[in-house]
Length: 230
Image (cartoon, rainbow, N blue to C red; front, side, top):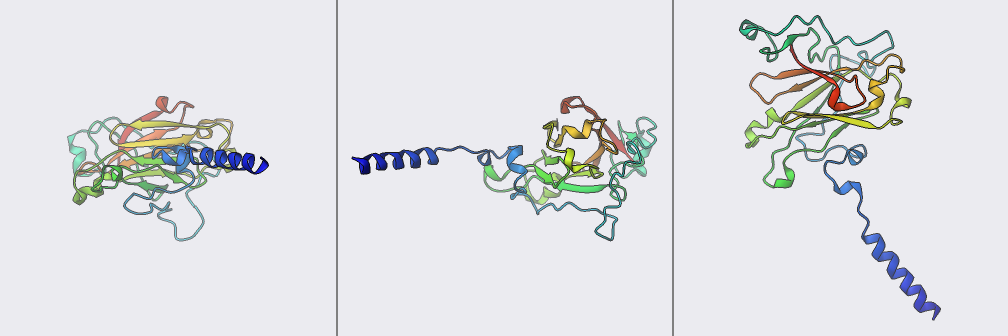
């Protein structure tokens, strides 16, 4: 009798274990993306500190004060700006810091082009220890145009990693371009030294576009986003 009861309990345990549904089965799960880097992008998308020759992040926020991203905006660009601008300038404001890898760290993501529907698109790329996730939302029909699926996130290091993960994340989506998720601590003005002005570059058009993103709200849908150029 005891052996039979033990067998029933053991079988019930196996059945319940096999039915567990975890977040790892959801390709768009933020929780899953924090555990693993995306595996279906063009490369492993390493976080780089371009312009730096050593391991020290010379571009990180040091608490010396505030956003440096406003950069002397002078209004929307005219047609003449296309002759000299690095980024799309029509309906954009000039910003000397626009998507500048010499001043910001860079993380990148791309939408992989594959023959199967499940291969189109990518998971979020988690920027390690920064409370930031970036995802390309632009797809191309041909692998020959895969360079246009790249997005680049320009940021300065979060000054106090111990403050991350306490308030939860929020997100901003620019449909067909990029999807940015950030830890709400980025918008917390009580944390000193946070430079919450970021930039996102999209390569979807012939001339790349740059967007200034200010993480100034606990609701990602309400943050300040503006197209800029330099």
